[in-house]
Image (cartoon, rainbow, N blue to C red):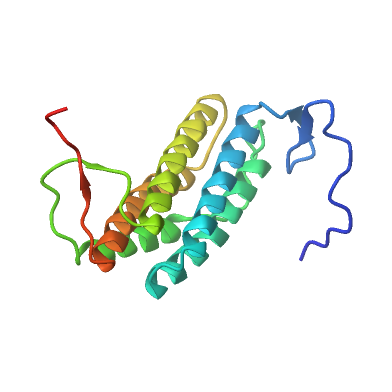
Length: 186
């Protein structure tokens, strides 16, 4: 367990940071951007949890927050020389997300139109988390073009954005509301 006694170090004041490997890079480095965006997803899930969603959703999101922390940690440890790092997010994690997608989606009506973000506050935060998750995926794809990124990490964020979409719809339905439909006449 990490023990932080001092939060600031002044070592990053020059626009640099250290990866988990110890390598010094710019704070705008693709690797830093990828794990930083994953961290944003976890923070937005915290906003969803502050809205006190259904207990089933809360349980799922708390687990996912921890998994995202592991995913960010794995991204920070990726070596540029191709050395493998321990797998913190695996195909089993992806499978669990798929099972959650199936479980929550089973209660929803099939979509016949595109929907917009909104509805309940929890659903709106879930939609925002979904869009940030998509950005994390784009950052990770850019990183994967430069260095090796385990496929399970890319699969995880792809599946997670699907689950967040489903959970937003599920929260709206639970609250007695409906999806916010795209107005095609505009």
